[in-house]
Image (spheres, helix red, strand yellow):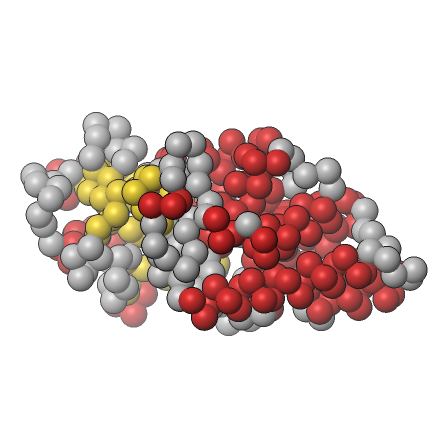
Length: 314
């Protein structure tokens, strides 16, 4: 049997989605963090921070409930003005973020501030379990729309928090099933331990399908066509506008909608690609088979193979 949009939407809302009240409180907490940081920047112009931009799943409204022992992640791009965007030390920017945080939160334990990441600086709020990743970005324009994100090994990528948010919101406005399908895809990825596959990769695949094929007719078909795409068409690459995926040599090519010279899936290994495609094939076959089953119990049991034992339909 096929599930209705209401049945699957209720599952997503009750079992997967971060509850609205919790999301609002976490966003307020990030807002208070940014207010403190902006006040310090205003007091001391030596930090040369042009703008803080919220990013990631929490800002897009697609965060799933945290797994046991795992925090909710919040992301903030910290756009710096530097004298020479082509040559500087990203570790210095991370230290500026650390100094800024220490000035804004003098009572925080050093254990709550982590600058060991390759590109990010992490601050932990133990009361709510929120972890905020502050990403240093070198601003490339007056409005801090675009910038260079550097790693400690020296590589850089042009990026745009604003462009990524606008891209998601534009596609979500065209297809109301984008967000719930993305939540289910995230759950599927976690349940099957698909290493190397990020939420952003899944989001862009689903957005590409909306661009190419239009909005899905139902939530179940949205999920099913995602698997079909991974099986049959992902090898041709994902790109938007005039970007050309054939210019890249990589196991999976997903061109950044903010930068057509960047393959956001460049770090995915061939083994990880093969596991993704093989697991997607099994999921597609399982859903297709489940649609022909006569009973609800049998169909739920089939879907549990895709989304885990927590899957339930009223």
